[in-house]
Length: 250
Image (cartoon, rainbow, N blue to C red; front, side, top):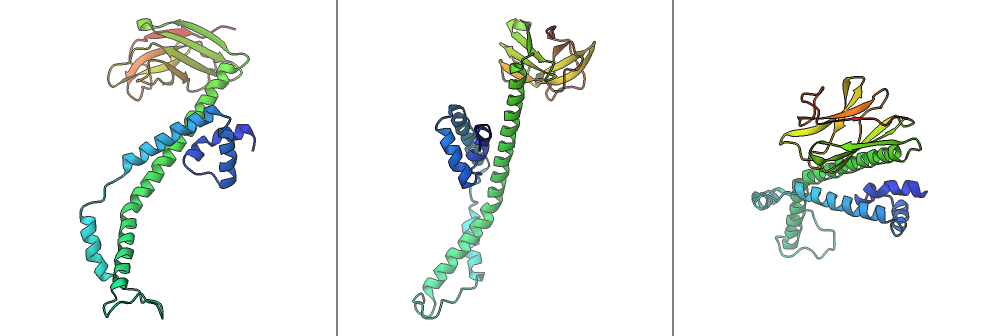
């Protein structure tokens, strides 16, 4: 397995989903890769928080239900010659049945929680994979040999930079010092297609500094606009632009 492939295993390693040979190879890789080590720590902490978020305290009636239902559990006869039987009532055998019934009840109670935790962990891994893929695409645009940049001041003293790569047919918007949008609102980016605005994605409403890979290809767009829209975005601009930027020319 080459180094490039090892870089993609952080999520699977954090969720203990690697087969033994890959786990050993990845742990050797971690000794020399600070970036992967940091990502594993972050993903492991996230997975732990997600697990705690869906953990449930056993209901008080669980003990009473177990004690009530164990009377219906048939006691397994001890093996011939065994020494488990004590007296006529099979005292040790009864305690074995109690323990077995308690385990079964506990497994039934927590089985649903475990399935839910596993689903949440899988969702976290998929989200991490999507974020990693987007970051890789963003890096490809910025590092492209034909990447060109255009910068300018935005409303409220913020600063914006547009990076465009014709070979990638993609664009990236970098913002710093952005004021937070009003509650329930979000900044939405738009491609300017010869005067027609085409949605290019949403910015993080909680981040004053953000790097956004614009949704969709650049094609014939000449620049971008930014508007304030309801949370979730709009199909077309519903407010005056807070910023307009032209793409860099060749």
